[in-house]
Image (cartoon, rainbow over the protein chains, first blue to last red):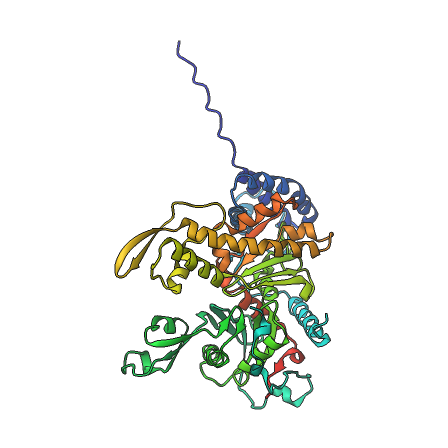
Length: 150
Length: 386
């Protein structure tokens, strides 16, 4: 009688896998215009997953770097998947005629993040940022005009 | 050293700069220029950073980090030794030819100490930003957090005739503005550094700490410590002299050793560094020499850090503690983020997070300065008189 081969217990899942899964879901929700559901996941499942992942890193810098890289990768993955879906949808519709036309992908909100180094100089300031900066400068000049007593 | 020690002769007879109203005819400048170039400039003690670009766009046409030094070629140097037979060299070129020049550091501990050399240096910077020499240059220049009116006036005097208009803004605020990543605003977990952060900018001459909380920082929000990279170099030299007398290592070499091996925290012995002394290679064990000098910096920073934290409102301080950012050359000291964070946590501060500005640390003040230059209103620019 042969000795039964016991299944090897699965290796404990990396906490980052959970972060990736949740963040991917958030990106999909945003893409579909479901901002409230996305926000809910951010404050619950994502926060919990990030807290677990952070314990695995010795320094905040390492954790931060890994988190940013993962977010960028998942955003790109979802974005590419959306493009693929747009391309394939009409092909699939003509290839299998009786199948009802799939629901078109909703007009996406602003794509999460461009592929750029997160800490690089951002060449596209928001419309209101120049006004906000000019207001800051005005505050500084007011302080200087008021004199050194302030 | 504080800015109060600047000789008063530097500003004798100085005319104050004026903010030009939008309708003032002088707003167009004394000479008509074909084009305008905006400059974001970080005049550092050891390294300066220049970014330049045309207004109305996001293009950056010039991006340079230049060692802040001027080399005046010595008398009697044979023709051809110096490229172009130049009489004055700047930045890397000056350092590479240090045997043939008298090296002058225009800035000491964050303030101008050699006005003529500073003018020469700014002239060089202007030429980098505008090789044609024809453009109107509007420059936002970072100044140390503790710069008083005397220090600002000295900068204006040095810039007179070189930049057409200037705006002087404290460096920590510019660092926050430069560090801000607009593409991440609104993302989960991203705290806008301009809204709520504490910057620790460890430069060559000074370490500047600044609370940035959505309004322009007042003097109460900023602390400037005249202890930074240069002071660490000096401590290392003293420690080296004790441990290895007559070592013959130059200040420049000591700085190189610090930049390659500098760390804070527990001793990282053994830390063997190979140096060439008298033409012969030697291996020196320098863990404690480096560690003692660098840890002194943390001991200086920490009380200032907790002072600023205590000044933040109770509504903002928990988030603030998550957004403490170390920038400047000192951010390259290994372990500095972890050590500061641990000290805060050990002292009971709630979930502190200290992070490093990253590889772009040399550029953040200049990036913020260029953003400010692009946003400044016409009547905020200062025309240099005198």
